Image (cartoon, rainbow, N blue to C red; front, side, top):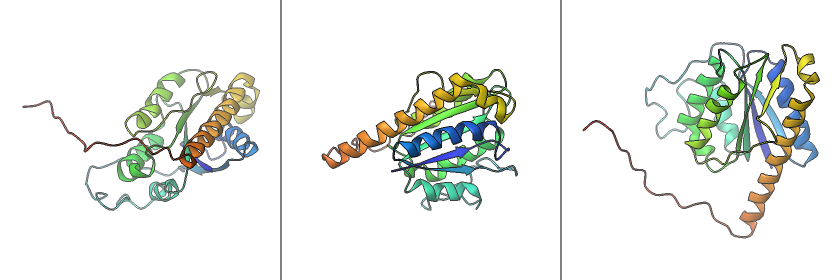
Length: 206
């Protein structure tokens, strides 16, 4: 079993990474492989609604999004982390996830997902709410923790001092590992994925 953790911060080893690294270490302790993918500090464009990904399973813009789509094929779970920018996820994380889910969403369906946020002070719950919306439109079970999954601090050193936040990250990792093991046990017992109906599209302009 393996989990793909996506760092949506422009800082490769900053506060968001510090929280994700705590999760990754705890996942490994619980027998689950973990990989952290950094979105990067370069510009990450959002979806331009060109439709070029239809039937291809990848985005027409060949960047880290397509790398994540490929890794998602074999990942069993996902954790998305972002710093708080104006009480929401970073622009890079938002553009990245819009394209990841639109072009490669089939690789994420029915796999557990979790979201974490890092902030100096506030805006974390709004950011987590934003990130979790990707799961609730994609047939993904959400993994929770003992508190809202957030850490506080302006530097990685300050984040490490957030004892409650770091404990929340470790509990999130254990909950993810538990859910993955439950899903694996169900699969071995012959429990099939939920039946899907043909998609119905309803527009509200008649």
